[in-house]
Image (cartoon, rainbow, N blue to C red; front, side, top):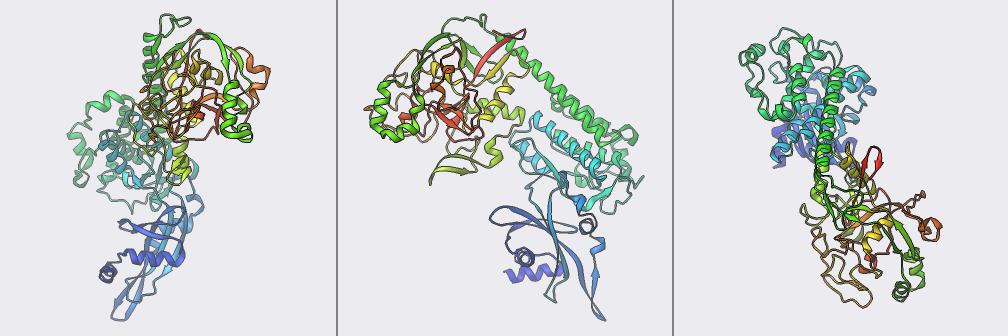
Amino acid sequence: METTERAEGEKDGRLSLADAARLIGHVTPRYRVVRALGRGAYGQVFLAEDDLKQVAVKILPLALRVRGAQGVTLDDREESTRDWIQLRTAWERLHHAALVRVHDYFQVHEDNPDALVAVHGLIVMDYWPLSLRECVRRLRKEQADTPARKRALLVNLAETLSRLRHDTGLLVTDLKPDNIVLRDHRRGPLTLALIDIGSLVHAGATDISRVDRADGYLAPELADKKSTLIDEAALIYSFGLIGYLILEGEHPFAEEQLPTPYAHALRQRGGFGRSPTPRQNLPGCVAILERCLREEPRARFPSFAALARALRRERAAAARRQRAAHLSLITATLPTDVDSPAPGSIWHEPVAGVEFVWIPPGDGLIGQSDAERAELLAMFGTERYRDWFASEQPRHRVVLDGFWLGRVPITRGQWERFVEESLYLTDAEKSGFATGMGRKGWGRQAGVDWRQPGFAQDPTHPVVCISWYDALAFAAWLGQGSHVTYTLPTEAQWEYACRAGSDTPFHFGPTLDASLCNYDGGGVYAGSKKGENRRATTAAGQFPANAFGLHDMHGNVWEWCADCHDSTMYDQPAASTKNPQCRERTPYRVRRGGAWSFEPVFLRSAYRGRGYPEQASTDGGLRLVATFVHGGHSR
């Protein structure tokens, strides 16, 4: 089978996977060829990988064997292969953030005398798995083509083209969705790069030899052969057509049936008809694209820089409108008395749907009791007690103002709204892992994040794989432009709220069982019996509340606190002041409450967990405090 494939391929220069592997192995033996990615007029692209990364390898025919009456001669294609010319003559300027990174390039002489291609050029570059066209298709299929994502694609593309023009003086003459690539269509800010290095020219160049005049993304003056100049004005028209694809999900004409003459056909149909949805959701973007698509080049934006500025202004205006809408919602739902509401009052925050419970002011003891100390020493011995639990002493009294605390941890559904609106990328998504329990025990779990934590969740479950920094980002988003400030609870606030007047290890009493909260039921504490180990989160609020009406204060997920973790904090006079908080600069942040994966000893009200602020774990979430502000003063 391989022999047949190779023989057929040699007739027209096509390469089989085996041929590609052989050529790549000549110069980069560490790479394994995975599959073919595509084929164009100037070569083929293959996906290859080693133990650390994946790369795309473009293989170009630089010289062909021509058989004639006088024998075999070589047809040199190198000068007509623009990718190769760019690499040979402008290697340094191709290292730009707007372009897919090229790692290296090589010439390989074919040792098979019967092969059509005598010399191959190999270009090794970063692998970006999605074209813009495929990104738009997937977003529409998954109903994830939100205004935020559409706006981000437009702004990012304009800024990419503007930076390339400003920094290098280069333009991409063959500007179309297949030559624009992304790493992911759902996660993060939708960063773009340009892949067709062969179509790069200095601004003002007139070379359109690589551009198909029937291409559906050409400006009308080029498509109708009225001009050969590919300048910013012509490419801004191409941008407008790409923008149409982003907003509408399709080209205004079937790309394979482009009308000729182009401009005349557009005039006949009265310009570009748009569906009502983009005009309703993205009216500013529609207006900008309509200017890009004006028939007269001088009526379009004068440069990519001007286009990028217009899109940034539109985005800023949309953000202001959104903040105003949030403020209007919040103002309409504010509690009638935020200073001293009735005990047990609940405020339903209207933007993400978070419920806050009023925790009345007061004082109480926090920290480990003498009875707990005796139990822990009996369970773990002196050395482990000192390492794990000694920082919970001495027990001391704190005085706290009243505050509003989330009734349950922030849920996956609430977090998803934040991500969809802000396109936020979590620390776990950036690093590619979270810590947690896996098949080989506790440690780094590759490819795990809040979307795929390693177990089933629905929108009512607490979100997990959230770092301390991620938690602050959510709080900032929720409070933007409103009269409410959201923060993580201080360690003192958290324990005071958890205890809800109790002085036992758990607010349920001296011990607990699996019917009261979600934890590793294989562990026991103070005479409790072993119970169910669910090995995953459960729906927020599923288990009984404490006396303040708070759920999941024990187990389910760890909850970040605002404090830095200082093991000597309770020995200091500052621990007993009013509204105490540890602000010492230490490497760790406080986590409280235990989780589904921990034994009951770590779920106690007094236990002081810790984690690095960038650490994301499969059992780590958050709960927020809301503070109402009016006229610059807290209420």
